[in-house]
Amino acid sequence: MRHAIFACLASLVLSIAARAAEAPGDPVEAVWLAQRVTFQYRSEGHMYRCDVLAYKVQRILQQVGARDRLIVRSVACRDFAGLAQLEVIMESPVVATPENIRAITDYDSKDELIARVHGTSLPAAAELERFPAVWESISIARALKIHLEAGDCALVQQLRRQILPKMSVQIVKDIDQVDCTQANPRLTVMALVARL
Image 1 (cartoon, rainbow, N blue to C red):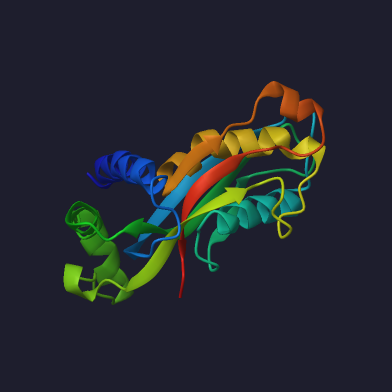
Image 2 (cartoon, helix red, strand yellow):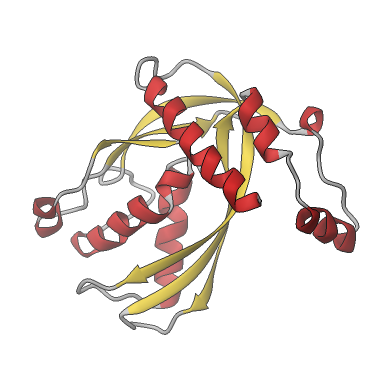
């Protein structure tokens, strides 16, 4: 049930992101969408130490709107291996539409059981934290906080396919193979970013 909700949210996020291109910079009311996503990195010539891979994933996702307290942890990763699997636990902004609010607060029995075991309560729609957010154009290659190199192109492409579609992110300029043979991966997105 929860996975179906996130799939529905992803399509809503994309339609909202498409409208964002018309009015970037205008503040909108947003809420945090909590997600747990598995990311699988397959090396295409560039291999990482596990901590470096996790750090780069974290910095890229924070740059495109994920909340600072996101967690990237190794599920199956060995330093400089050709395949790594990471778990990303994050919150990212979504526009506070009635559909998004309903999808976020539509808890299934598993969610309720986990909350009960942890002694917490699940927030109702009125209790969700609301905050201003703006649609912002972000160039991954130019983001100083990420420190990308030419070898990071496959990583950016795989994040673009596996995780960015689950966030309020619209691809403006995609990476092509020519970009991967040159300096830094040049991906430009329109992302919903919190303005707290």
